[in-house]
Image 1 (cartoon, helix red, strand yellow):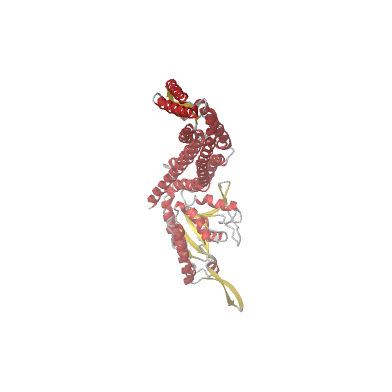
Image 2 (image 1 turned 45 degrees about the vertical axis):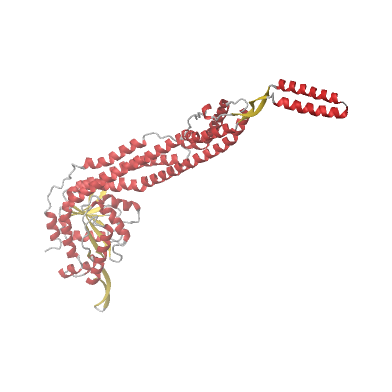
Length: 566
C-alpha cells in the first residue's frame, strides 16, 4: 500500500460541490457598513469649539483617523477578493496551509508529500497577480528563506498544499503575503522545528491565524540528529531519528504550549514529531516510515481532511468574520479606542479646569466687589442713588467676565456669547439716614417773664434793705424766686433730626444678594464652554456605543459559528 493511499482515499470521498454558502454574507459585511454609517452620522455633526487647543485638536484627530480607517477597511476588503477568488478556484478541493516560521522545513515537507502521489496527480503552481499559474518546478528547498511567493501543489485532484513565505520572513512583504492567504485554507499544518519547537512568537502568530477556528495539526520537523558511523573503513555522517522518548517529550510540550495559548480557539490535535530527511536517507522501509513519524502524519492528515470538509462550506462566511476581526475590529481597538481614551481624558481635564475657573472668577469678583461697592456706596449715599450703584456693579461684572472669557473660554468654545448681567435696584441694599433725637423746650416766654418779675422783686427787696447786705439778699431771693417760678412754667417735646446718610447696611445687603446671584451669572457666561464639553462628551460616548454594538454583533456571529462547528 502506498504511503499516501489513506490520505488519497480520505480526500477522494469528498463531495465534488463545495460551493460557498453565501446567504449570510451580505448581512455579515453589513455589520461593518452599519458601523461606518452610524459613526459617520456622529462625526458629521458639527461641534462648537475653536481649533487652537488640545481638546479640539484631539477631536479632529479622531475624525481624521476614522476617515483613514474606513478607507483602509475598503482597501483591505478589496484585497480579500484575491483570496476569495483563490478559494473559489479550488472550491472543490481541500486546502491545507503549510504554516510556520522561516526555515521550518515547509518546502521540503510539501515536496515529500507530493512525491508519494502518482506523478500524473501532482500539479505545482504559484500565484502571480492573484492568478494561479502552473509550473513544473517543485518547491525550492534550502537553509535560508527560499519562498518569496505563494506557491502550492495540487494532489490527487482533491487536495492542495499551500507553501508560503515563512512568518518573520526576511521581508515584511512576505509575512503579509502569508497572512493574506491564510483565510483561503480549510485546515492548517503547523510546522515547528525540533531545535526550538512551539516558541511563544510562533504561537502568537498562530493564535491570530486560528481565530477562524480552522482545524490544526502541529508537526515538529527535523526531529533528527547527525550520527557518525563507519562504512567500508570510512566515517560516514548520517541523519538518525531522535529517540521515541525525546519525541514524546517534545510533542507533549508543544501540545501544552499550544493548548494554553490558543485557549479553545481551535481544537489542537496531538503533535507529531517527524524527520523527512532521516527517512529519505534510510532504506525507505516500512519500519523507517513508521519510525520517522511520517506514517502517523499521513493518518493525521487524513483525519484533518475530514474535519476540513466540515469547515469548508462555512469558510466564505468565516473569511468575512476574519476580515471584520483582523481588519476592522483590530484597528478600532488599537487606534480608535486609544484616541477616544485620550480625548475623554482631555474632556475630564477641561471639566475640572472649568470648575476651578468658576471658583477663581467668583472669588476674584467677590473680593473686588467688596472693595468697590463699599467705595461706591459711600460716594452715592448722599443722593441714595441705588440705580447708579446697580449700574456700576453691572459694568464691572460685564467687563471682568468679558476679559475672562476672551482669555480662557473663547479658545475652547469659540466666540463667547454676549454677557448679560441683570443687577438692578432691587438687588441694592437700602441707604439709611443717620438721625439724632433731643428734647425741644416749649413755653420759653413764660419762663422768661416769671423769672424776670421775681428777679425784679428780689432786686426791690435788696433795695429796700439797702447796703451791701441788702443787695446780696435781694439777689439771692430774686434768683431763688426766679428759678422756682421758671420750673413751674417750662413745656418740652422729643424731636428727631437727620444729620447724614449711612451706607453700611446698603453695602451689606448688596453684597449678600450679589453672593447669591454671581454664581448664576458666571454659569450663564461660561455656558458655551459647558455646552462644548457636553457635545464632545456626547460625541465620544456615541462613538463608543457604536464600537460596543459592533463588537457585540461580532461576538454573536462568532458564537453562532462556534455552535455550528460544534
